[in-house]
Image (cartoon, rainbow, N blue to C red):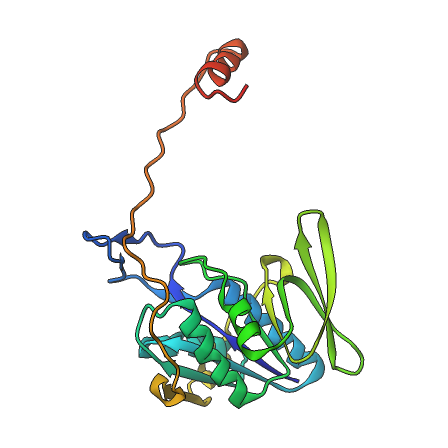
Amino acid sequence: MKVLVPIKPVPNPDEKVKIKGDGSGVILDNIKMVVNPFCEIAVEEALRIKEKQGGEVVIATVGPKGGDQQVRNALAMGADRGILVEAPENLDSLAVGKVLAKVIEGEKPDIVLMGKQSVDDDNNQIGQILSVVLGWPQATFASKVEFAGDGKKANVTREVDGGLETIEVALPAVVTVDLRLNEPRYASLPGIMKAKKKELKVVPVDSFGVDLSPRVKVLKLVAPKQRAGGGKVPDVPTLVAKLKNEAKVL
């Protein structure tokens, strides 16, 4: 089975980013870029599918040339080859979705696995856009993925407000993954060494003939207000009084 996994480089979630003075973006100087955590889960699931059924795992990303490092990280985990579509920074979701659709049309995978969202902008849009552009079925927020015996359908279990829901999708399909699907493996030293020799094709975005004109424009970024510290109360009656009179929650 051939699995294609789109990934996105994001600022390390453990590091604190600062907003530029004019509010036009964030300062990424000296901030380490990593594979989006949800994308890592998708890579791990793709590798598990390959280990059970055989096949190939292809990694793809759209963005500046620096993104090749995050593709190499996924290759070090065990993926077979990578594709970097060199494109300007800050493409909107529709443009990225259309470019990825062109990559997928060329690769013809059996399934596309990807993170449900990225932790930098939390848009949660690319998977749904891909499904529409490709005309493929979609299953979002997967916490379990199983395949029918003939390999032509997948049963995807997803978390909903009332519990769990299992849906059946015909392949090829787009599946976005959630946190509880698995725990990604660490790249081993041999895996890191092998990743240096694996194929990583760099393709200019212009070669796809996709209109990259933005439909969404970020006007300004503002940092959230700092929360005031909590206080202590001497007894329960005082706590109840504060909740009733100050917090207005009782």
